[in-house]
Figure 1 (cartoon, one colour):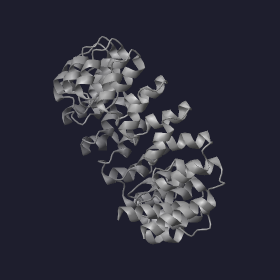
Figure 2: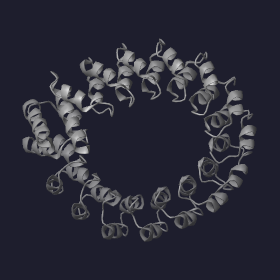
Figure 3: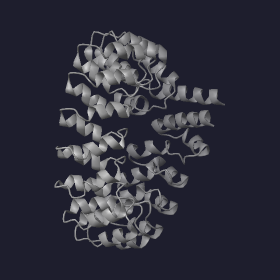
Figure 4: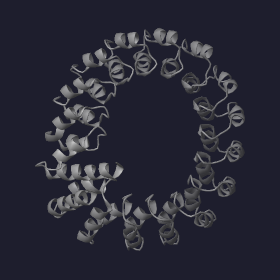
Amino acid sequence: MENNLLNDVITSYSFDYKYAGWKEINEDILQDENIPPEILEKLYQDNKDNLRILRGLSAHPGAPERLLEIFAADLNDAVRWGVANNKSTPPNVLKFLSSDSGAIIRYRVGKNEKTPVEVLDVLSGDSDTMLREGVASNPSAPPEILMKLSADSDETVRLAVAQNKSASPDILDRLSGDAYDSVRAAVAENPSTKGSTLMGLARDRNSEVREKVAENNNAPVMALQGLINDPEALVREGVGENKNTPLEDLKTLAGDQKQSIRSGVARNHNASEDILIELSSDDDGYVRKAVARNPKTPEAILTKLAKDADWRVCESVAGNPASPSKVLEYLSDNKDTYLRKAVASNKATPGQVLIRMADDPDWMVRENVARNENAPVEALLKLANDSDWRVTKLIVRNPNMTADALKTLANHSNYRLRFKARVALLNKMKEA
């Protein structure tokens, strides 16, 4: 069965894409990570002199190893760059490219998570700052290499280490005393930074560093409480939105004069019902918008905000998965396209509403129906004959698209939809 499906995909490509334009090949094949490697091989055979296609193939995550080895020796830098950047490139090919004449290509090798440790070790000692920075940003770089680079003489290298989520708490603690504000701010933002380090950074002289501490969900309660009265509004806003901020402190910040701080509290998923009810009547539309977007906001408040005078508030209700079905149905008829777009993308929108919205006059609304993971098959099949390809191409990738529906589309008159349906059906069979 699988072999028959693969043959159908190959046949569809051979007849319909052999002389297709760049736009169709780029969108339907090169930009689709689910394309079978056999199609990529055939595309290469048909276009060995087409640089744009070679560049696209070199970066494709499904490119066969044989092609990546060929591209690694290509004379064009852009093709070799694609291989060096490709997360599917095997370690032996990356090792080969680590000696490339182009520094930008060696830089991409240093950033690639598949690059062997021994290659990263060599690149981490290179005299070129850019190469060391690439290794410093690699989440697969081992602790000993990151520790060495945390003491690098160049601040951009140390910054890359500070931003690396794989950096150990000890390395980040070391960088918390860096002379450069940007490095300390990166440490304050890193989710791997330990609480004791964040406590120290909460007293930093630089407001951006304190702001990042306030936003870090690993920040200890004591650190957050020390920032409640910070002179900088952005810092207090971060505290208001942090999930670790105690409820009593959220109540205090909910009365702050700055709307941005009240908005931060309104976005906080740990804000109490009382706080959200209070802020739902705030004079500032941005605050009410934040309440309308919070999934913890009570249904009664969302129902009230669905008729708010500010359309941005209504749009937030339309996109909130906690909004009642009746509210979403009510907003689905709104004359504002952006409100209908939000309803169409909401996973909580009832199936019957999505079926109706598949006939919406605006393509952006129909596009969101096609993307909606809860869209019924009936709604998706309505879009099979949509006038806009941007909408149609999405339906075959929707997880609700059944094998039977894909079989129907596999014989569609539109050759692009026919090809995409056959590819999707093949992948569905492989996953089964």
